[in-house]
Image (cartoon, rainbow, N blue to C red; front, top):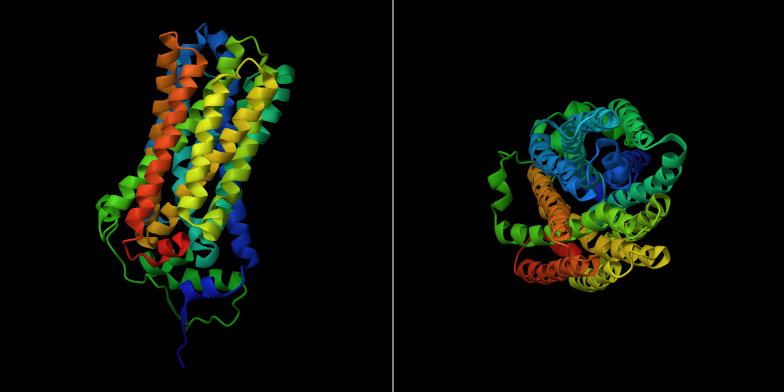
Length: 447
């Protein structure tokens, strides 16, 4: 007698297996080194500027190059992952991160530095929709927001650990050591992914119809009763044509755009405080080792905030969890502008920015993962993250222009704080829109 097994309900109803935990851990590991790389260029910036004979404000395009590449990577890899699979694209992304981060250490000109950072950024951004989609598709619906944001919290954790490590590496081995380590480890991770990471079960069934590979993964999850005759289905087993336009269909257009604003504002603020705080403190006479120490607190706050965002949303709802956090993030950002000449005060303020804005951005990621079904999840998440990356490109560039015009750090951070307040308003608009829709997964998170 032929047995039918609904994989979506299996994942939702059964306890989380060791393989599912391993998938989340491997995705988190990629995110961890994404965080290390993102903050490294900010810490190394004063030394790179000195070696290339450039003023620090001229490094704004260098900061933006990796983030622009990340936007390109998020859009392109997310869409391609919905066609060919999450695992393949994640391995390619890890290889790109490793190779071009290594080459950053050997950049002998401004143009070469820009190119290396842009190409490494494509890998960094391309990994994002893959790890978010894999995590969402291997976790139960009831805990999906929590698992997605917990996995994403490895990004600020990497930024925190990287800042502490870099503060030791620079005095002992020079700034190039940051990129030697940050390049070699992702290459090792690519090998680990190739050997042990499974493809998304839901993708294999819904998009590929590859039930043979799916049965093998189910057995690795401990489902020994799965045989070659078992018919596998998912709740989204109708294969759709994947396209960018699909993200805006079925009533999702307005919600998508509203969510994008929060991505743009939140990620922009997190980028500018991470990338420009070392330079601003250096201009105030603070040592590079102390600035690296300060930036580490942003990672600590971000790790706590983003790691808890999903659980807070599941427990209290979208608005009670995200809006107060973003408003407090606004206050902390403004406070940072008045604290760049004090290590303790700057560490406190930048840590609170990471905590509160981290809740807002982590919540936005959880909502994006819930909003889109399997056949467009990579595309939808990739586009949302690309908008966030564009915010990360624009914010540091705008700060560079503001500093070039002679604006003091207090005024710069006041403008940044206003951006997080705008993000809070659009969370309210998103919730108002969502309350009138009928998307079961997203509504479950919002309740």
